[in-house]
Amino acid sequence: MSNPARPPAVGVLDQGAAATFPPGFLWGAATAAYQIEGAATEGGRTPSIWDTFSHTQGRTVAGHTGDVACDHYHRMPDDVRLMAELGLRSYRFSVSWPRVQPGGAGAVNPEGMDFYQRLVDELLGHGIEPWLTLYHWDLPQPLEDAGGWPARDTAARFADYAQLVADALGDRVKYFTTFNEPWCSAFLGYGSGVHAPGRSDGADAVRAGHHLMLGHGLAVQALRASRPDAQLGITVNLYPVTPATDSPADADAARRIDALANRFFLDPVLRGAYPADLAADLREVTDFGHVRDGDLAVISTPLDMVGVNYYSRYVVAAPAETGAAEAYWRAPSCWPGSPDVRFVTRGVPVTDMGWEIDAPGLVETLERVHRDYTDLPLYVTENGSAFVDAVADGQVDDPDRLAYFDAHLRAAHAAISAGVPLKGYFAWSLMDNFEWAWGYTKRFGMVYVDYDSQARIPKSSARWYADVIRRNGLAAQ
Image (tube, rainbow, N blue to C red; front, top):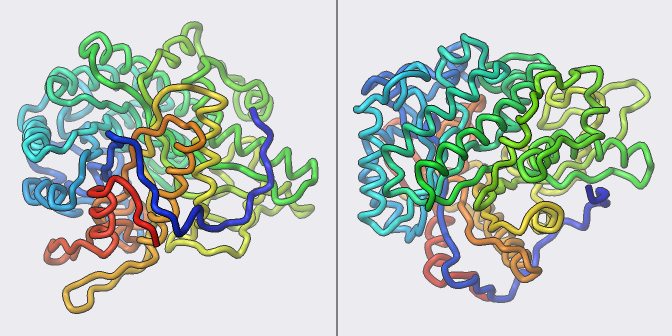
């Protein structure tokens, strides 16, 4: 690995200059099925782990659930027309596994798959490229009851599901990504328990991470055999991890968190091996006995592209003498083997999630993936910010979000100028939605959603983004 460096000064990149992106750059926005679809019990859909989790008292803010969400299931044609009005060239969506294969096994549910057939056709009819994510955290509940992602069989079930989706949609969908942010599925779902299914066991989290990657490799093999012309990849959430000081202890803390947050997934998928230091860090958590011969060869099945989700930077310090971890936006139980590493805040601007705004970190992240791992095309598959929004005179002005997008798109352009093969950018999110354990209290959307009336109001950031797409770049300021 490259040694973590001290974080640069947080600021804007090339703030005033115009920036034109390469011809054919793919401009899009992203959503996830459970966050927007609603219709939780309609059309043969059965419960996912997020249905169970959100209906469990105390798991989400104010008991919010995704039962209705943005009602996209019923409002899909209007939502696609709105995408077209904004000029989106691509739309990244996820398929709800329990909607198309209830229970996570057996034959396809025709009514559930029909929804995605109609969505894909609607997108193509408006000149919008479908970008399909197979899994955005909604594991069918029966598979969780059988052991969930810590159980090896779940990886095989996922490959079967991937084949069903490819058979139904692969004639019209060119881009497939297997998983969205497997770190969150493993370490938030099975480590800290703040995400579904709400389990808290470090060894289970590590096993879940491995089986997610195994499912990825098996699915890529199935998709490749079925749809050889498809563009196949995975989306990982990555963070520059930097030490709070120049001390060796802080450098080691950064190395540990980098291993769990970034290299845990990048190394097996793109190098076919786990980092040696990661295994040493986790020796009191697991002996990696769940890794079988041939697993890493499957996991590292060649890809066509890599998706990067970027939101912020981690700045970390060695454990304090008291052993107490500093409060931050990742619970200590997310980090098996390194629970006492402290996450340090720097007093820089933050979003409504409390995440520090650090556009230069996007350049570092993209350059690192390209320099240290792969020459494959890269896509920013998520990037965005939550802020408090309000409707005034029928409009929503969100200058902070607009500034966030502007700074990060300038960072993306800087990465391209430095030689990174970045081919597209997906804003997170198209619309306000169910923000997981935060329910409806956090708004990431470029489009405001009134959850009572389900009215959609494009925010000023949406109109600005439409202009960026139209000019294929950023105007001079």
